[in-house]
Length: 317
Image (cartoon, rainbow, N blue to C red):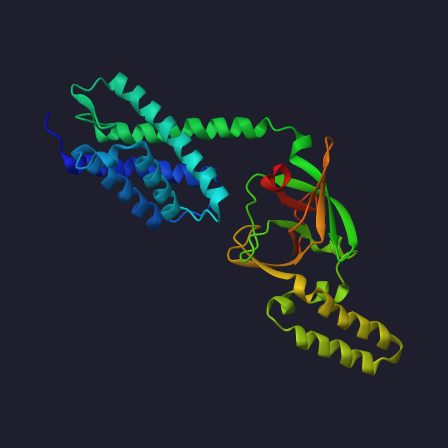
């Protein structure tokens, strides 16, 4: 049987691209076509080398897993080993689903000449079968994920979160979001997003009023403005001086959190490192340290069902 390496390469680029796109969509990550294409080309080159069987090493399980990890690393911003591991698992789940669907389609198409060489299917089957397998596979796995998500009961979708900052606490209802992987970029601490108006009990008013200025690094300017105001209005002098001094007490807690969600691209949230948070469910109360509480200046829920968003992995870890 004649094997055309260019056909093997093209088919694998197409299939790898579809699988990577499906993986990224299911993981709710940002879509970057160029990076996905580079990763797909790498996967296709590996398929060609496997067919050529130049070195036995290329066909080993360890090497196959290593190539998969490199492909995911190129195509997706995983942000840490745990997310990389999860993405690789989803990648294999999608791959197995697509492979099964494609084989089923090949059975119905009944090509005249198909063989497996070093784990790679090659033959005279039409390229459109590969595309159809990817499309049908994506539809199936999307439906399965949707069913699983819809089966999550409401009690597991929400929880109570008690946020403690500088020995003050506020408790609110929080949405448990499976797509929230937001982390503080330097320390990697997970981020709980909370509406700004519910944080008045734990965060000084001077900070809440000057979020944008603090993000822009204008802390000294904020302090001077309050001290000038205190000097011009005698009966609030002590209050304003104390309020201005509060910035110094909280400055080491400030964290700047970049995000690409909440209806805005390339946004920035101001966060404060909490003393700890408590996640309260019907079953138990979990205490989590090294968590950042980020302030959001709009309503997170249209109906007021919740006032904070917490990541699923924070709740379950």
